[in-house]
Length: 194
Image (tube, rainbow, N blue to C red):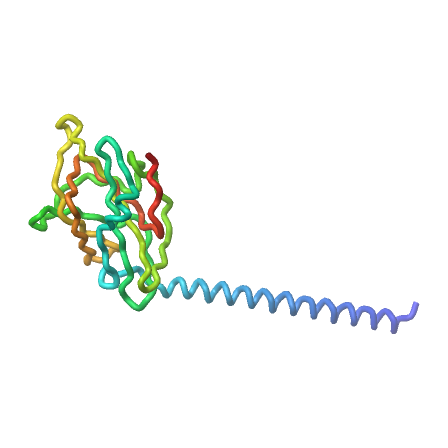
């Protein structure tokens, strides 16, 4: 057996394996650095602050959510009015105000199944400048034969994150009785289930 031939074969095999490992490592580093950059980019996008947003009761969207037996839904359209992308996620804390701006005690169920709207998936909504997101609030006007307290709600305070500042949204004739259902921010208005 020719030892020179065997040495040359081993050297060529080793060189081939090393080149292959180098290519695999380079590909892994490229994929890892790309994933790291995307993760870092996502971390750099902060939660939306109320000063970056504008919110209104969306009457056109409201007409798409039809109730029955006194069940209603209010749709809040939220627009990013800043020049930076920000993030909305989860179910915001919503406070309900009377005509004098006082907070009303209202039982709220966060992302619960209501008569009109099923439980919604919680998503992270990346809100680019001028883009819109939506928030649904479901309620009933039935007082359950006088057993549920009713109230006239004039405005909502929507807290987009843990900040003290809130978005103020004036409502049009929102008489509600009993519990109110608040759903997570979403990119599009979900279809009513009834």
